[in-house]
Length: 428
Image 1 (cartoon, rainbow, N blue to C red):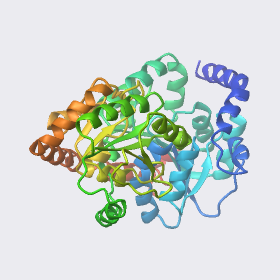
Image 2 (cartoon, rainbow, N blue to C red):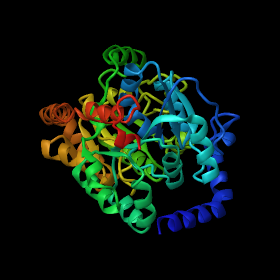
Image 3 (cartoon, rainbow, N blue to C red):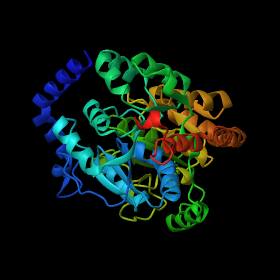
């Protein structure tokens, strides 16, 4: 049954491969991108630790763990694969000593070629990137796999349940699961993961590492931007369909708070220019971060059209709205603004961060709106109540600090699978 389900999956993916290749061609990194999608890579002399992260968000979450592995195992080569070009850019920026490849299309000939050349000592799959043929190729080659920061949203769980035999076959070939919550662990187990190989470690997103010079960077940036004591809010990681409602909310806010400044940060770089055009079309004055344009008294929107500066941009604001939550995207990382002491606001769609939202909510560190037009009144209320903002800031920092520790747990689990540490049972 397991073989049959994977055969059907492979057959259907083969039929869809022209569409899939066309879709993935948009995520081009360099001239070798197409070859990498077919599993063609260069071998390494050093033993390899391989990690797969879907995109930018997973790379950012994985960064502390991957840096720790690099520091503790300097004799090994870290290789990181991603699905997207934005993920590739983050790997190159944040993990410059790592080697990056685009993950191959999940067909046996591609994945077997990739694993045969890479020969990793261990494979780390972050969060929910479950590719059956890639996992099967690791199994054939004797490569132990761990799912790190494992999570399954309700939406993903319902979808995977429809193909449970295929998922059970894949999950039975994974050595360990480091689940970020008990609910996530239970969902994996229902899909077929052995409970004996599951450990609930918490999320390494709580082990967020702020740059040591963040205060200096912030002071220098504020001085260069020269926006004085203006009230500033940020709408970060916006998706298509969210920018316009947020801009309309800002326009409404400006009628009551004419000196307010919005920092708008689209999630995907391919949308930067389109969002800039949308801002202009709404008659709002704009300064672009990428062009180092100054923020003057008449500037109403500062477009954060750069990569790798999210924490810094959050720290510039008085209040933070985390997008991906007005539309049914599932939300984005609520811990980033909390970690830098900025009160957190979000929309109703939080499926991907429900546990984090609950912790922040219970601590009094989170405000929620159902739609964007509720934001102007809430922003004004918070600006006028400094004690509330201070309490939210303190509570958010406390939640982040109180839940740290997953990094060390997951690091030890990964290291337990390395050949020098693995038990005979794990090696088999």
